[in-house]
Structures are given as structure tokens and as C-alpha cells.
Length: 456
Image (cartoon, rainbow, N blue to C red):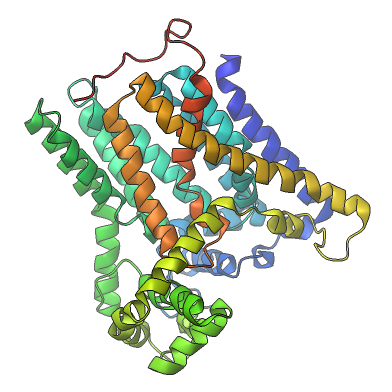
């Protein structure tokens, strides 16, 4: 039992250690959410506080409160409640708790299909990932998003992979679908994840035709329950703004970040310069207005209509540059570290620092680079080991579809894709790397490993 809970204990200890350092060196950061490094973070919390204090879905600090179209409600509701209860430390505490629960779900899910040894190693890799530590102490939606996805898959994959054996099938479908719906309301990038799972499942049904009617009903149930909450929110947006969409952020990203990355690659310079080119050429509102519509004399409908009108032309003007931009951003995100975030959290300047402070940041930097590089290499080896061990092919299909979907979201972020965008994708790396690490141990020495599945 102690061995099984070791990854959870490590997760708690490492995050507790970082909390203690922040409390010693940067106490005010734990008190005031407005000190967040990312400019999006204060808007999340301010929006959540307005919901709970005034019943207004707005990020305006004072009346009149204008309805918000930029953020979905999942994370603001959580962050606002935690900040009102315990200030910023409440938000970070929630993130740490969700990380521990994610670690537990990952262990249980992987152990069920790949054996307890692989599950234990996957959970351990999660606990040791410095990217998780950094975002546990930022008022951003990434950690809750990862939790809702992992918890949703914890409920749903057993009924997808074992539709005739799973007990309480429809309870699991309702719980898992609701959790995926919450993931979508936390970060809109998850909008098409249930659709990807459905496509993977349909593809597998052409290979394995057993119990097709039952499995089709299960897949349809998962698909429908996943979109109940997002559908209701899209209906709210239609009633409020006349736009049936999850948020206004999608067109902003496609025009100014996906398109901006292509223009940046084509013309050179910074992303900000590319965005300014796009704004001037098409007469669009500047990025600062798009991200803070309520602070200016313009409506979300006007901004969305202008961006939608020129979106296709902007994205297709430099197709090769668009491809190159994505191919630059993807590896950049996969290899990026968060030493700069740690520097901000513990108040150690990155420039003009003395030798002692430099050495204090160095272990984190080297561990981040070593960990992520090793994880990527082990994941490649894990795919090979998966075939050699003849593990479940349908689970590999789901992993491939899941990885492909979130890799595409990273590509669409353009050349400036940063480390946080890879967080959902890390689940696949943890699992595949764990398969590679567990491979040297034979099946005879580990009876918990499942029976081999025959490939068809």
C-alpha cells in the first residue's frame, strides 16, 4: 500500500516544498491574485469573484458590468470561490489537490489496462514533472483542465474498452461525460476531444465487431453527455450575444496567433509585429482590445464579426509559412522549460544575479531539461515496447487520437507556442514512457500485467 501511494506522497512533498519557498521569499504572491505573472490570470479570478459577489458574469472591476464572451465559466467559478475563501493561496491549494487527484486517476486507469507496474511509473512521472509544479502555483486553467480530462477518461475508458464487462455502465458514462464537459468549459481547446474519442471508437468497431449495438449505444451516450454542459453555455452565448459559440477566444487565436505565427514566419520579426501587420492590413481591432473588449467602446459581436470575416484569408495567405510556424511551435513547446516562472515565483531575478542565486535556479533548469528530454525519448521506445508486449491495440488507438488532437492544438498556437500548451499531451508521454520503463521486467515476474491482446 505504501508503494502504491508513493507517487501521491512525492507529488504532495514537492509541491509543499515549493509552497514553503514561495512563502519565505514572496509572501505577497500568496495573498494577491493580481500579482500573477500571466496577464490572463487576474481576469479569470476577477470574473469568478464577480460571479460569486455580484451575480454578474463580467470581468469589469466596477459597474456597469458588461457580459463576458471571452472566457468559459469553468475555471473562473473555481478560482473566484477559492480566492474569496483563502485568497490566492486557496487557488494554489486547489491546483495541488487536483494534481494529486490527477495522479491517482492516472495510476488507477493505467493499472487497469497495462498493469500496476506501468500505472505506478506513469503516476511517478507525473509527480516528478516540473511543469506540473509550476502551474500549480499560477492562477491558470491548465491544471484543472488536465484533472477533468484524466478523471473523465478514468470513468469512460473502461466502458469503451470493456462495454460488456463494466459495472454501473451508465453511471460511469454520465460521470465521465460530465467531467469532459467541465474540461471543455475550463479550456475551450477540449471542445472536440469527445468527437475524437468517438471517431477512434468507430474506427475500432470496423476491426472488432463484437457487441456492436451495445458499444455503439455506449459511444453515443458518452458523446451526448459530454456536450450537455458546453451546449447549454453555447445557448447562453447565443441568447446574450447572438453567437452560437463556446467563446469569442477561438477567432482571436486563429487570426492573431495561428495567423500571426504564419505572418511572423513569412516576414520575420516578433509575433507582436506580425499581429500589428494583420491589424493594419485588414482594419481589425488590436489584440489588446480583442482580449479586453469590455474595457473599450466596442461590442463582442463587432469584434467577432470582423475577425470571422477575414479569418480564412489571413490563414491561407501564407500556407507554407503557416505549416513552418506550426512545425516550429510544436517542438519548441515540447522542449520548453519553466525556469523563468520559477524565477518569478521565488523572486530570483534571471539577469544580474549572484552566484548563490544562480546555483539555486540551476538544479531546476537541468532537471527540467533532463526530465523532458528523457520523457520524449522513452516515449518513442514505449511505442516499440507496446507492440512487442502486444498490449491493447484499441488503447493505443485512443492514445494516438488523443495525442494527435492536442498536438494539432499546439500547432495552431504558432511559432510562439509555449510550455503550458503541452500539458494535456503529457498524459500520453507519461504512459508510453512508463511502458518503456516497465518493459525489462517479464510478465512472469509481474502477474498484474493484463493478458496479451491479439491484434486483428
